[in-house]
Structure formats: C-alpha cells, structure tokens
Length: 197
Ligand SMILES: Cc1cc2nc3c(=O)[nH]c(=O)nc-3n(C[C@H](O)[C@H](O)[C@H](O)COP(=O)(O)O)c2cc1C
Image (cartoon, rainbow, N blue to C red; front, side):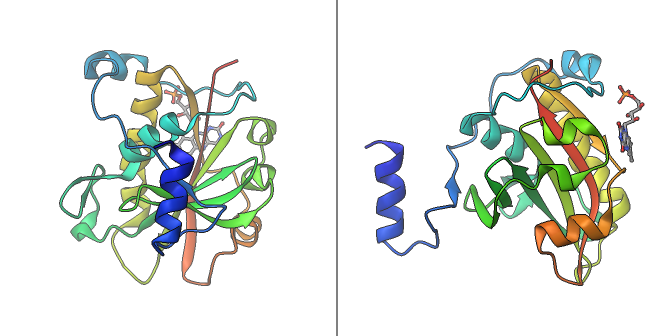
C-alpha cells in the first residue's frame, strides 16, 4: 500500500487528520555519523539552498529534536519533565505543529510565513524554520530546556550534512501572529534548517 493510500485509510478510519496534515514516515533511528564526528562537525550555517527537505529527513530531524525515545519520554530533557515545548515547522506550504506521538505535522496555518520567523534574509530562502514554542501553563524551565532541543537539531544536522542556525533574532509579536499562538504560548527560540549552499 503506498503512502497516500495509508493516509486515506487513516482518514477514513476517523483518525484525526485533514488533507493538509502530513503523516511522516517512521523516523530512522539508526545510522548517521558516529557521535564524536557529529560533535566535531557541529556548527552554525547562514547560507542555505532553497531545496526542500524530504519527508524522511523531516521525520528523522523532528524525532531527533523532540520525539519520544521511551514511553512518554523525549529525546530532549526538560526541568521536572514538564515537556512544555511544541515544535512548529514553518515551510513554504504552511505552519505545522509537530505531534511527536502521532509522528504527524498538523497544519495550523496555510501559506508561506517563513519570512515572518526572523530578521535575517536566509529565513525566507531555507526550506524549514523551526519555532520552539513553550506552553507557559506547564512550567518547566523554557529558557534552558530549549537549548537541549536546539542542540539535538544541531547534532542531527551535523550528522546528516545539513546546515542550521539557532536564532534569537526574531520579532516575538510577529511570530505569535503568524503562528496564530495564544496568550500562553511563547516562541522562545527559532532555528533554520536546510541544505548548505
Ligand atoms: C541563544 C542563541 C541565539 C542565537 N541567535 C542567533 C541569531 O539570531 N542569528 C544568527 O545568525 N545566529 C544566532 N546564534 C548563533 C551564534 O551566533 C553561533 O552559535 C555562534 O556564533 C557560534 O558559532 P557556532 O554555532 O558555529 O559554534 C544564536 C546562538 C544562540 C545560542
């Protein structure tokens, strides 16, 4: 059965999905560079090609960032295990929330809002901008917890030969509007990912 058929079947079975949601392929949890090589290659990139990331890469990247690697536990630690973050993926086609349990990108807004996620030119060119959004009602320690997620992305990118830059330079109000966030949802940090130019 191809991917589209599986997706249609899930929708017919009333699993929560719409035509715009993206059911990601199962993340590949093996392979990549050995850890010490990935650490050695970790660095910031600010020049990106506009080539899209395929769904397998998106799945692997998001799982590495903040997926579940044990029962209800994540690849990134959080203070008191509050797991207060949701990763938003902003692409050419829309704004999506990463649902790690369903391994699905839930479309929140349709359209290209990449340029709204930061003040640097490359944000509108790179295929993916991640926005790390904390649910302020959950507690935790967002300012420090976000660093672990971001570093997971840095290491995945080093391992997969992708470019990335974590970014504090963005307009919070503009991001909140573009992502249609509520009062209690706070964009803490952003991170651009794509192929290096
Ligand atoms: C919290 C934080 C915010 C950052 N914000 C930006 C940013 O807005 N734009 C940018 O180009 N780089 C940003 N960076 C990337 C740093 O400039 C970069 O990590 C630093 O120059 C060291 O380079 P390296 O990552 O290659 O080791 C940020 C890094 C951190 C940790």
